[in-house]
Length: 107
Image 1: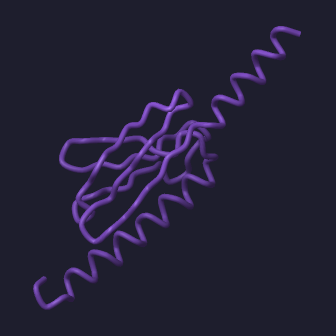
Image 2: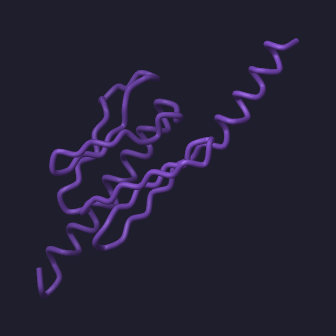
C-alpha cells in the first residue's frame, strides 16, 4: 500500500508542473513552474529564435528553443504529437512576426 500511495503522491506533484509561453513583438518568455513552486524564466528575442525538434520524434525527443548560444528544452511532459503541434504553432507565429517586421515602414 505504501508504494501505491507514493506513486499517487508523485503523480499528483508532477501534475502541478507547468510551463507558459508568451510571445510579444519583442520577446518570447518561457516560464517553468516546478511541483515545488520554484519558477524559472527565460527570455528570447523572437527574430533570432530557432524552434527545433526531430522530424519524426520519439516520445523522448526534445523540443528546444535556441538563440545566441542558449538552449532551453520545453514541453518535456508532452507527447511526441503534442510537441510537433507546439513546434509548428511556434514556428508559424514567429514567421508571422518576422514577416510583419520586414513589411513595416521601419523594417
